Structures are given as C-alpha cells and as structure tokens.
Length: 168
Image 1: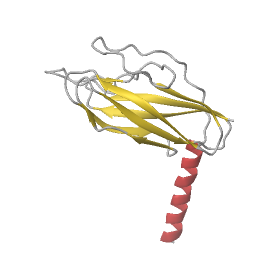
Image 2 (image 1 turned 135 degrees about the vertical axis):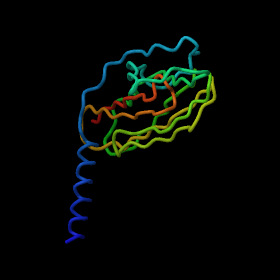
Image 3 (image 1 turned 180 degrees about the horizontal axis):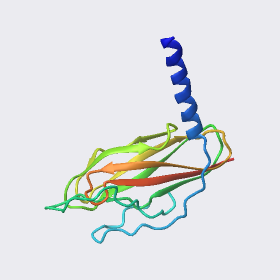
Image 4 (image 1 turned 60 degrees about the horizontal axis):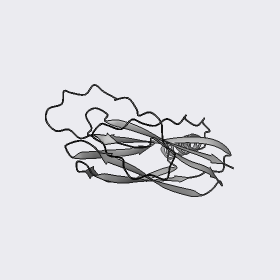
C-alpha cells in the first residue's frame, strides 16, 4: 500500500511539472529599464531590451555604509521562434553598480524545463553573466517562462527576468 501511494505521488508530481512546462502565456510588453545613476552602460546583450524591474519583495532596512546594487540591462530575453523539441541557450548580463560585494544567492527558474548557471558574487563595478537554457517542448504557440534572481541587494533583493519564445 505504501509503495502504491509513493508511485501515485511521483506520477502526480510528474504530471504537474509537464503541465506547468507546456502552458502557453502571452508575451510581456517590452520596456527599457532605467539604469542607476552610477551605472555605466554594459556591453550589449543579444536579446530584446526589456521590461520594468520587479518591485522590492520586502521593506529594506535603512542602508548603513556601502551597499551592493543589482543592475540587469534587460528583464526580458526573447528567444524568437523555435522548432519544438530542442534546447536553446542565452546569456544574461548582470552588473553590480553598488559599492559593496553583490552576492547572488540563487537564480530560480519558474519551470523544470529551464536550467541556469550563474556567478555567486560580483565585486563593485563588475559584470557577470547568467547562462539560461530552456528545453523547448512541442506545444506550438507563444510561451513565457521566467527566472528570479535573488541577491543581497537591500533595495531590490529579488528581480524577475521573463523568457519569451514561440514554438512553431
């Protein structure tokens, strides 16, 4: 009986993951993000300029001393139209425009079909790149997934980047 319940739970979780990875969503409108005053323009990324940054997830404590600042020049990666059943990858540039070390605590994909590789920290003024890979399903149409970057930025500890693609 215990083994049957375990098998049923595994099948239920697998079904939910497949449903979540194959859902179609409308693309998000593109809007440029305003850079911080001390930010320098980072090298161009082979993506579409992007949407408004996510609002802070919690009230930040008052800043005391130098603070890190996460800057992402694009918050929407457009993968374009793709054939189903393949893996696509893009690099997302991030920068620490603050005055203290930026620690990237995690980069969390919205779906099991998305994998990421990211730097764990950035010194003040330094840039890094997050590798984003998506296993494209065979469900035709417009799709939007996301990754959420969680860091020690006291003003914006969580920032969402949308991943948009079309399957033909």
